[in-house]
Image (cartoon, rainbow, N blue to C red):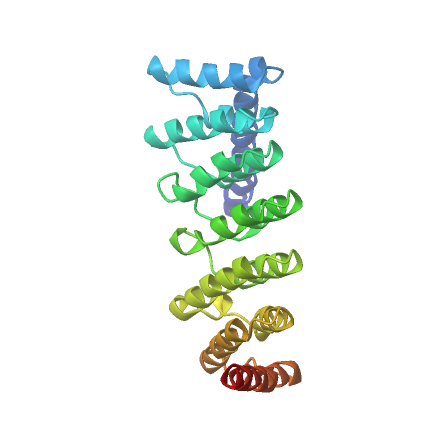
Length: 273
């Protein structure tokens, strides 16, 4: 049918046109940063500042390039400063910018800048659609044995704009790392944070399974902290009531019985003194 020809030809041409526009845009973006590709983070940051000061908005590709070029301990602070300028200029902050800021801090082990970034995450438009960037940050802290910083940054999770997806496993990872390192007080605090978020989250992706409670309680009992273990197990029971699908196993039941016996023995010993 001749009348069908325009429709048949129009659609492919439209697709080709859109592809051409995207390719052209990509080429322009690459051209804008070509003169900075081999430059240091200091030079790229200076270029960004000059652009903003002269009311000539630097493209977002500058910020992405800056985060990639962060190699010295002081470079992460430059990435954070530039990030703030883009936010103040009301330029959109995308996932690549979020990843770039977090990863640059970890790459140069600038934990102060990482802390400042996460403390101010909402103002910096760090909207975590999944837990992957934070998981990389927490793993980097663990690799450097920065246990107190790991505990502190984990405690910031309730104040962040973070998706429920993957958050439960993120809590578990942090708790296991702290227990394995012998940081039981920090692990108990991390468990409190996870428990509080689970109680207020209203989403199954945010709930905690039995295992982290069991791991913390077992470590506390081995250390002779019957009070801490009893408290942990009480939290576990409350968590199970909110999440009936996660039934307690034999390990949890045994720990509860052992905690009661240990507490009774301790009370008896104290009374006999």
